[in-house]
Image (tube, rainbow, N blue to C red; front, side):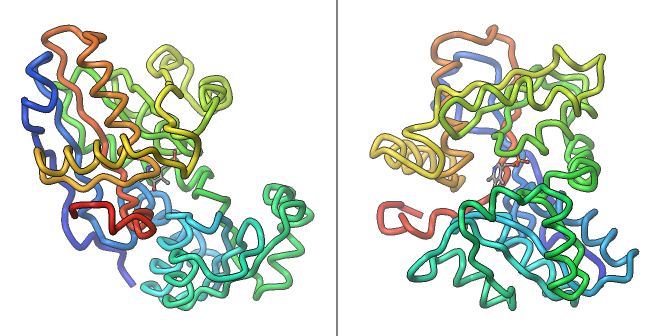
Length: 297
Ligand SMILES: *Cc1c(COP(=O)(O)O)cnc(C)c1O
């Protein structure tokens, strides 16, 4: 089956009040509108993986993620849509299903718990061969869709970005999305890691970045708000205020942290007055399911 977005992504200007007219413009590339479940960047990363799986004549995908992983839900939905079976290897053992795991099951994913020790072997070839043999000769997609197919898929996002911008902001998990963008645009990219000490990714990702682009990106980890998957009351208020001013929902794990970082940088005059920043909305709104009662959207 063809993989077509439900709605084409578009660029939306933010309300100047939000950045207090400190620079020329802050806009958002709305990848979240592509699909409510195969959201944002996951759509691009999975698309090429599904193609490869189909080319190899395989009928099952197998992938990895934590109990709140946007990638797992997107994989389950995409597989179902394309008539493939899906297996999700979950990091850790939960007594009761998280909302994310429930959604995965609803889309037919076979959910397999894994001890932390086994999960650490998620990139080890012997282990992957064993899993593939055990589960229907499955096509393996690494955690977060972080492989060459993922990076190729993400390159399409770069085509949506006009040259007129001076900076691109993107949230960074595995960094696959950042790499795909940096390699395919001339504009410098500012990455925001939502976990503590995430700036190690600056070095870690260099191997995937074209040589001439090595100076075109920087990843900050100052806006983790307590660590990966964690949040503060300030972050929740920030998300509600952002929604009231711009009518754009942000997710608590990734995009809200990025936007809090961008806002602070802009207000601290880190960018010149004529700067035009394009922030990539990478989706992930399903990750808000545990905090919906605190959100105004
Ligand atoms: C998964 C995810 C990311 C991280 O993408 P990477 O390509 O792994 O860096 C960023 N934002 C959202 C909303 C996500 O769901």
